[in-house]
Image (tube, rainbow, N blue to C red; front, top):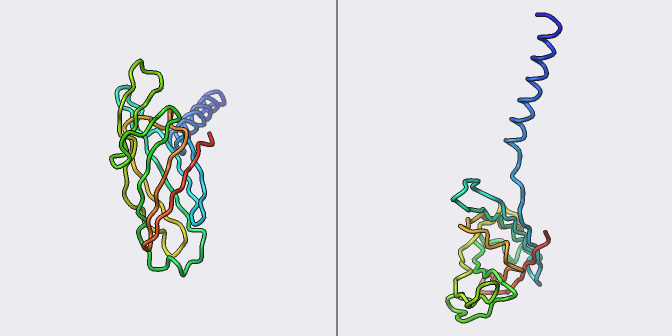
Length: 165
C-alpha cells in the first residue's frame, strides 16, 4: 500500500471512529432541576428519549438523598413520592387530582393534570434513592419548578426543585 492510500484510509478511519464515539456518548440533558428541604436534597435531569418527528418522549432521571443519619432510614428501601409540575400561570382547581387551570398563551384557560406519583428505590446501603420515569411531552419547557411530596417512615415532607438550566 502506498503513502497516499494509507493517508486516505487513516483519515477515513479517524472520521468514522469519531462519528461512532459521538453517537454512543451520553445524551444531552435538556433541563435540570435541584432543590433541598430539611431532610432531603433532590436532583432531576430531563433528557430526550425519542428523536422521531411525531413522537415527543423524554426521560426524567431523579435522585433523592437523605440529609439525616443513616440509622434513621436503614430499613427504608422505597421512598414514596407525588409530584406536580408548577407553572407560574397556573391556578389550582383540584389539588386532589393534581389538576390546574393554565392561563398562559391560550385564549381560554385550559385544565390538565400535571403530576403523578410512585416510589424510588434506595441504592445499596447509601443515603441515595434513584429512579426514572418518562413523560410524553416536554412539559419541562413550561414548568418553573416541580413540587414533590416525599413519604418515608410515616413522615411526609414537601420539597420544591427549581430549574437551573
